[in-house]
Length: 395
Image (cartoon, rainbow, N blue to C red; front, side, top):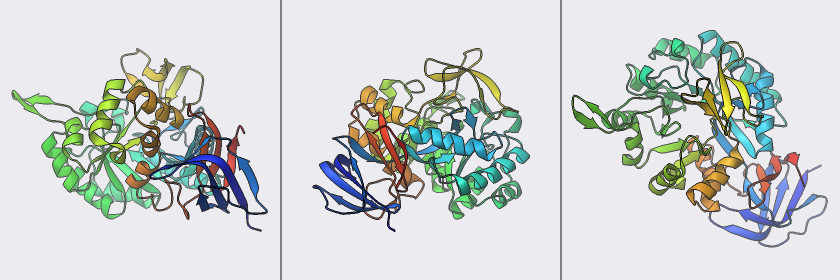
């Protein structure tokens, strides 16, 4: 028997317009119909949106965990439970992200991801893995564990990729020895090379872009800006994001990592088509403030969560975000004066396009996955639907 859902009286956020008092039909796991007026069908579950917005589900392409779980914990449960927590906050698809670690720890977590992906049915889709490191600049390591930072060797890269076919993106510093060869190789495998924790100059980023690095991880965090070498000024990774028009970026719009002025600046010069909003959240996302652990329970570091952000225990630097997806959209609207339409796009269609998944998700289009969320004007999530299944509701 076909499973049908009809959502009516909805303000539908489409790719190029908002349909007011519209109707959406879901059949099985896909969107089957969209209309400006009611569609008369029988044998369906009726959801009266009562004027709520219906948006594509949020897609988080950089998250480390949530709900007390980290994706480096070494258990399938960590992936499943964090995905369920983020679904409550509007995320319908995600790329769980690793940290620098031992090879054994990385291998175990990659295997546990595959186990979790096979049984996850209440949380955000586990699209694939984002490997963050270990090929970074020591000078821009941020909160990454310095014990495991190194240069890429192709034999090691090939070994890591032999453990799993789930890697979707891989963040690295393009200026270190072997990074360009590494980027060309993973790009040939359909994996997105992304610039992160880098001290590169514009000239090095330009060369990196030509070798496959098409995206910049958490813009402004752990990367070079204008700096001097022998008295001469050189543009860094930050300036490169603006100089290379085709380069896409992601930002942590949690209200702490970037102030209102920089959120406005990024949006003005890159635009919604080139910006993905990411939580970059650690295990404390969706949890009360207080002490927490960044990374695995066995090998992570203690941090303090206060005023909406995780910090090192001495409070000398941020140690991760505790944001959830709906707060990012809300902040872009309230802090950066971004229209609702564009704020939603940066959390849906743009990230889907960056990871080459926009043919099946990221917009409300007939034939795409029925990954939908309903929210009010304050971006409070009232319902989350993933693949035609209601996984969270307050309606």
